Length: 245
Image 1 (tube, rainbow, N blue to C red):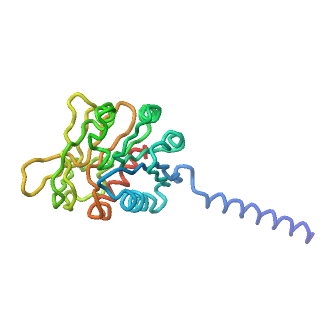
Image 2: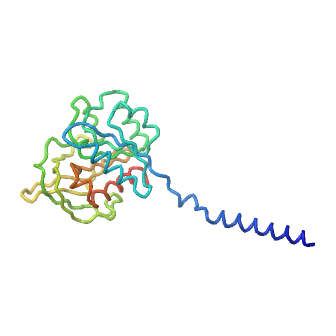
Image 3: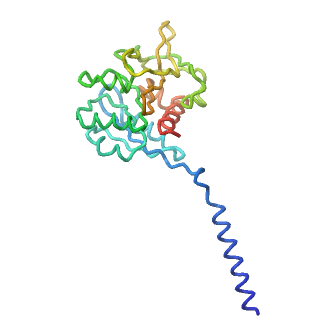
């Protein structure tokens, strides 16, 4: 009799333990895998290792939002694209390989995400006009002298601008980004204006590429942008939106 009761109690304990274990497990909907990001840097006029490889990687990996692999070797992009959710281009050095160029377009055509940072919004490559026309929706050929300017959020309802102050100022290079009227249309989310000028330029925008999700961020020269909360929030939001989250 005592043996039967012991078995009965043991059975109850095992059932309770299984129930507690099951209840403690989060549902599939509550689990979000870290976004896999490939960050490409390298080139001229910017400290890529310090601000992109260092600061931006840390910003994106905070709280497990993303796992980021950084490379300054464009020849490695092709082999890595199949394993990432978002391609983050910050480089102004050439991507010369034709197969890699096609793979980047195929990546976007597959509905994947691109984040195009400050140096990658320049008209860097005369032999690859499709990049600026179709993926950037335009580009920049100049900028203000490094110094202070204001950024104003013009679309506060977009996920990329969530929790970003309506207006903030910083020291940076104010890029003269101009949309290409023959290129992919853009949706401006924020503009930049220097105090000594009436000219206003896009500083944050969506490139309305037919299949992929593309964000352009014109900010990002050095510490005055990469280390401030508005920029970091924009960057995290951009990667989340580009990944479809």
